[in-house]
Image 1 (cartoon, rainbow, N blue to C red):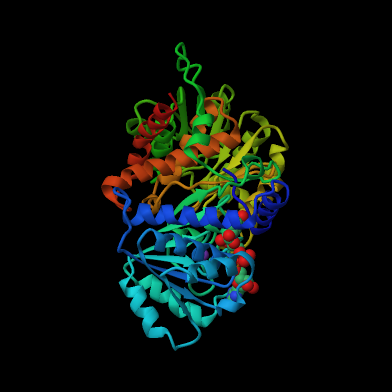
Image 2 (cartoon, protein in one colour):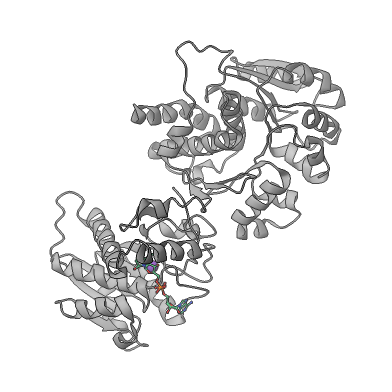
Length: 523
Ligand SMILES: NC(=O)C1=CN([C@@H]2O[C@H](COP(=O)(O)OP(=O)(O)OC[C@H]3O[C@@H](n4cnc5c(N)ncnc54)[C@H](O)[C@@H]3O)[C@@H](O)[C@H]2O)[C@H](O)CC1
Ligand SMILES: [K+]
């Protein structure tokens, strides 16, 4: 599914109204129904009866407020006790929002125009008693900081015990950047219209929007699938299309051979975990090249891989090249970096691999650090074959010679710019990992949870991407499959363990089950 910025959403809305001829009031009505559905899901998922329950709608003066007022009217008709806190004078509202305000005023619902401190007690009481609070203060029209009066109410909503539903985007979250300047509504669910907005996946947006539900509000599919929009969110359906088919007559030769160059003294685990990620992602043959001194440990840690000991003893050095060459020549994909350590002697070998190997190469961890020390290594690749980089924000900052803060504030743009500049698929890791392609496409990954914030999970991811590449998946799709299934494995583990305490090796071991459950839904 595509993900849009404000300009793109406005254009789609305009086309729906102008070219398709759908009245804007109907779009607002459909948006309101989508909110009502979410109220039902939240308060009365089984019997669907909302009668007698209390709803408070915070409405702003724009069309987001109009959506809220239209939803408020439906909720009254469904028997709810409804109060609208309108942060404007009713006369200030325009167009569809003004009409929906008048229609609401014709119901038995209560409308309080909030101006300053006067209605504070009533509003506070209503919020404390509410079963559901609907945030229709600001949508994609919001810029910058919230007015201070509204901020006070936002804080009160965030302290209330009710279920909070945000309309289109939580108020206070900027739709293009996900920036939150001081405070924003913390929603349990965000019902977003047409297509999801960038801000739901960037900056602080993901921490505020809760579960995201997307409603097309009857905008034609052709407008929502505009080929001019090149930012996407990964979904089960899209991932299913990317999964390679396992042929009945397949064997380890046809399932791909991958070479993993990893490990150093004290970090044999990184090689083992990356290897485990690869094997659990279905690679046919995995060969690990690792320094002499730890080869036995790696071998013992991963029975199913073949392990090649290369010079030197604790860290790979210049003399490791012949061993790497021998293995890598027949590989369908190569991954370099997990646990290699900052080892400058290896830079010469890295350069050789980049210069001579045609197959896709993943650079991770310490290989990325070598690249930031010597960016001329990029030139060694010189379009010879696909390149994939898997930096976390710290590694990205070093590669781009900026701060982590700059990376986090600029994730999408930076990932895309650098993917084009480096002619590489960039997997910029984070709570919402971005996979950026040199052709300008970018994918947000919605899976995963804070339980992944533990040593070794990045190594598992690299191994998994290696396996998809070895099985013949394109670099962009291999990266998408890797991050999505890795995150989904963690989400599966979180069902039993919560968001902490599961191990990187368990994430790897969960991968086949997660992949299989997607395949089952396909058949
Ligand atoms: N996309 C669609 O097809 C549909 C969207 N709908 C809803 O409409 C809103 C967007 O409505 P809009 O009127 O353009 O903007 P807002 O409601 O978000 O409010 C803008 C309003 O607020 C003022 N403002 C902006 N920033 C600030 C600030 N920091 N402080 C104070 N005031 C601010 C601005 O000047 C405007 O007056 C969209 O999100 C959907 O919810 C349709 O209803 C259905 C079709
Ligand atoms: K909102």
